[in-house]
Image (cartoon, rainbow, N blue to C red):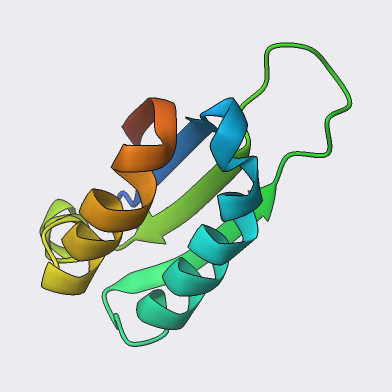
Length: 104
C-alpha cells in the first residue's frame, strides 16, 4: 500500500514578552490579532493565548499559526494591518519577540 504524498505545511510560532509596565496590553494585542486574522484566508489555523504564569521565564503572549505554503505564510507576515499591529501595539511594548517557522 502506498500512502499519498502530503504537502508540507508551515507552522509559525511567536512568543512575546511585554515590558513590565505594558502587561495590561496582552489582551488588547490578542483581540486585535484575532480580529485581523479572521480576514486572512491564507492562515489555515491561528491559536493565541496569554501565559498562565505557571513557570518562570515565560513569555506573556504566544501564537501558533499554520499555513499551506511558504507563500501563504508570506502573505500573512507582510499584510499591511498585521505590520501595523506589530509596529504600533507589539514592538513598542515588548522586551522580546521570538519567532520560528517550521515545516511539518
